[in-house]
Length: 402
Image (cartoon, rainbow, N blue to C red; front, side, top):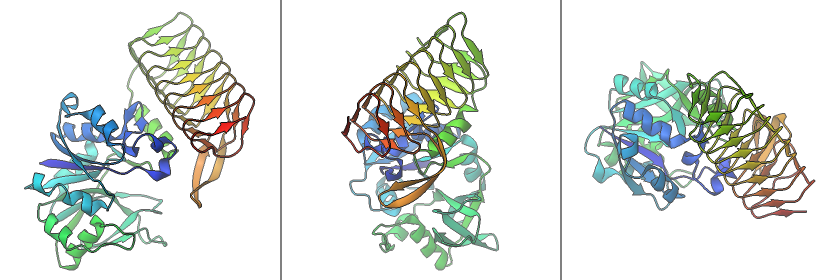
């Protein structure tokens, strides 16, 4: 059985991080979201994988190549125009001639999630569902006598806590039904509209409610929760690098090859530190923090519950909390990310809620000494921020702040 992963979209609500990579390549515990899906499939012996790619496809293809390093065989299809999930699935018609799985490339799952669907699948179509207290923004599933009777996309009222995860098992007959699916009000061909047509015609559409991991990182700051969960799966201290005398390591911490934890540093897991990193001396890294490869974190800096991507330099005496720092950033000493709770963050005229957030910084920025970023404010890509600046509004790409 083959698996089709939809990975063509950008992930607009994860900007500025997705200005330089697609959402599926955002790291959680130092691995791209998409890698968790591929590894979960491989653990269920599903090794024939088709990736539908589009936005920033080169980064996906360069990382996964033919899949050999991940124990799978990967083929690629390009979706030139983002015309919806049904359109993306239709592109794979010539490569599928039996039952197959469809997954979204931007949802974090584990092997148990896939196993639930495979074991319980029945009927013409099987949807994988999950129980969620918060259903805003999701497709809600209604059941009748154990079968799916209706899929309601993003209802205003809470009519059910059973949501559609976007993971399906189809037979090849789905392609004929896609051909008959009209374009939606949003200008896309949605696979949920195709499935509703099958239901309305009397087809047998069933659901399996998973007990496995399924995390939908809608916004960039949702990655922090996912990062915390997956770091919690670290079972022991794995020190491939070196830990100098006087450094203290507590709890579950993974340290990559050629990384050095300098004397006086204090690290409390779960924490992961990538390869070729230089930490300290006298640096504090607290739980739920991921540090990517080739990073340097100078003395008397404290970091907690944050994601630091690869190739980042952080100056001495800095404080970073509940934040995401993109790749290839140079951050001067005494940088501070202010943290706020119950924030309202505006994106293209729409307000989004963040329970707790410091800052989100895109790639390739140079930030001078003694800079403070107000809670919830974001720095895009290619920005230059002079010493002593207080960042009180979002910075667009290539901004210079004096």
